[in-house]
Image (cartoon, rainbow, N blue to C red; front, side, top):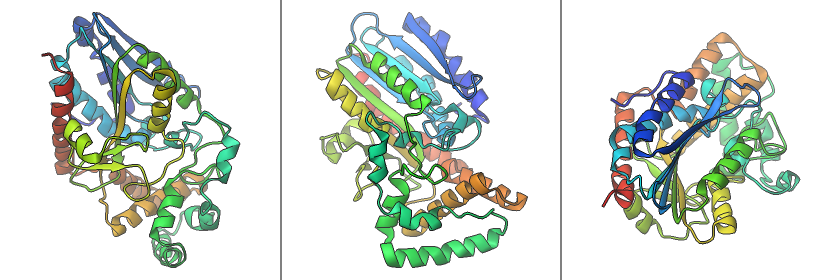
Length: 371
């Protein structure tokens, strides 16, 4: 029975335990545990299954780029192991399965890494100094996004957020505020959605894993598990601006009725996105391969303007607590609200997430299945 693990360590052990079963079908299977620089006891774990005859297809599934989101990702990965992996042809299909891209974040129930960097704003090959010119609205909104006092008066902070939100909505409008908050920023290391001053070790690790893992395959599909964005009752397949196929075609191919492109009209703009970087990698180093990658976003709060404001509120308050400290009462409330944003406690939400995952895997695995 598929369950959500209670900790990063439990999740890692469960993932590693599938090695023997995979090896029985893919003899050329290996587990690579890549230790984190800041804490070698925490690892990103990579299972690679090489096909025995020809590298026709590669299925990539990744979890935990935003640490806390890895708990639902772990359950989806377990569902794949339990119900779908046996339907693949080990002669022609390879697997690249990655547990906890951001192990520190998952272990500590945080979204960012230990340096407060959002790894999905950090995949960038060029000079990070150039990124300082992006996100022009963030400096003006910094007092709103980054309160400088400890989070002691929780009730006052909630009321103050409402007032500041109304004022900023009047000046900037909700769309510009959303873009400024979510795009990624490269100047304020204590701020929200900080993309870093340079590439993080976790990012370098994943770049190497993808370069090595994609080599030789004719058809590559990557599904990256996330939570937070979108309607509460429907998984959204979020595609890269580099993906040229229309939404209707992708919905049919990947078994989800809701497809959104990562742009301001359908999702939001991102700098340093992992999947965008993969598309560039594939075009540059694997031009003969057919390539597709997308984020599977399992919505939590919902996608109304009110729910988006609630999400931004807890993002700001959580960062304020991390950077400035706060009272035990505030810390407990923020911890619970933050977990609800990325891992709702309602059992019906989890069951719907599994149902959406099954629908997706039924379609995707059909493209890869034994004929």
